[in-house]
Length: 391
Ligand code: GLU
Image (cartoon, rainbow, N blue to C red; front, side, top):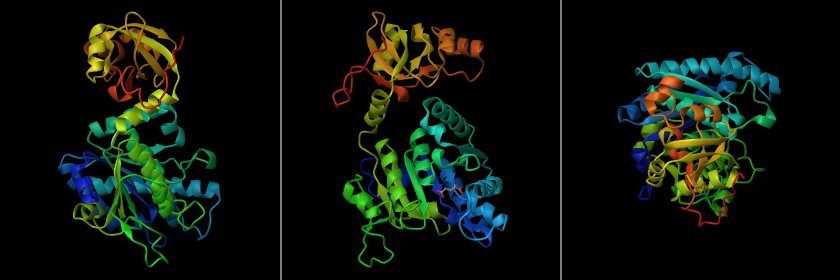
């Protein structure tokens, strides 16, 4: 996407798109759900889907909608009050999305995440598999934080960063933040008549972060700062991000027709950053010995299939980092394994059909997916340091 210069082009090219919807767009404190707006969003989603694109929605609004439905007084809520409000609001929110998409014969699937679901590897892989399957079924995932159980210490807290985590988890091409502001300005535009709009951010430098305001400004929580933080998460992992105003009808069509927005370009070398993450942060818990055919497949960028595995060592669980070694024990690659050790022992050497026979339909053929795999002898010249062995 290197030649992409604005939000319209980025949207035009994206195959998998995560759209974050802020509470204020969806919910009016007095009248509740903004059903007309949601219908227009549903039409936009349907239009993208007709073009063959995948869309995932990360929607806020559970607490705001719940408090409107329960007619709670204005002002701050206690934690358990906002959690109870979210319980009421989320069910209404899901129904509203389900209806808005059903109007276009699209099914919605609700996913409620807590912080651990994206931060712990095993749960991360699990969440990714579920959301991926939902997309394969042709449904639109509608995702929110599980506010009813998430307390302060274990919360994302804002859906900007949650949406960025979802976008990177699902390797989305584009994250769209629908906001109450049409992008990044050189200074908060309210009260700064000289503030200029920035249409394109090629890299999030300290100067860009300064424009978003520090944590202590009015722009914290859910403001421009969390949006730029989301941009850092997304762009580092290879997902571009667009911030635009969502408070108009058909907000996604508006991006396509060139309404004002800020595009944050994805890092030019995202695969390397992701591989760096795999290599740099995790310890290996086991090893798979593979045959020459599997090594050749890995070298050409393919996933590691069970058929090429000749031996399994160690006690690991799905999502753990393990080493891939050749017959002589030399490390070929490392990656996040898709099977527990016991199942890996069952599938080792088997082809896909035999795997399904042993573990049931839907069992994965890839023991390590290529997105989760780092080759040992490539890309290590960027300051990552030596790979450690498990001994
Ligand atoms: N998860 C919260 C809700 O649905 C919103 C968080 C946010 O506004 O960023 O009410």
